[in-house]
Length: 319
Image 1 (cartoon, rainbow, N blue to C red):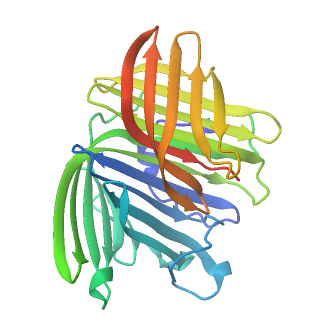
Image 2: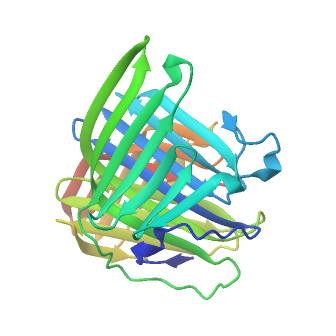
């Protein structure tokens, strides 16, 4: 696994080699604690089962898609789970603004204004299925600064890039409820990351855990990948006032799961100066990509509490 800081690498590469993939993650919580959403755009992923709509009846040709879930007060109010053929993933590069397109859905970076844009647009003849949302992510800082970890394992070629871990998010949403158009605007904080590389179906990765939490002063990101041979790739990033405060790759962690469903209930992280307690509150997604939760986190540094009961997102991508 390679941890990289080059935010320009968020761009779509166009690589369709067998086993290669690129996946972008988007998450945001509004400032009122009412709306939150999670989205994923992927290309080259072998995990494409269970979609509501496809561009082809031949599942072997499906290699890109979008997953989008919008919640209001812990209740799912809209989801888009679409798969497409690989040639339906379009790109456009005009005036250095690189854009990725899946039908009327798009993601691009506005270089002149330093903003990421995610647009979800689903047109349907049925009113209750019409939906349009525009998400604007404004990075609070432009350049990542953590240490880039380069492994000696050249067989997997896996990369993890927190493209923009701290953003101000403005969202404009339109949909229909009881045949009436509903408009909503929220402001909040959000996160963009990307994983990509060249892997095979028998990849030796067993489990990946990712957590993202943002408060007014502190922000916390962690990544853990367990390999079947016993090796682990780990990273913790703690930001204070949007500046990197702590970076760790050596720490212990303990995961507790439910007895029957084996879903993650909680996770604890400990090092010489750091203690993290994470509790999963709501299981918002169960899909071919694993489990995603709205979680609550407490973080203590040198016995001083810096995050207390802060809500964020936790991913359990167990294969």
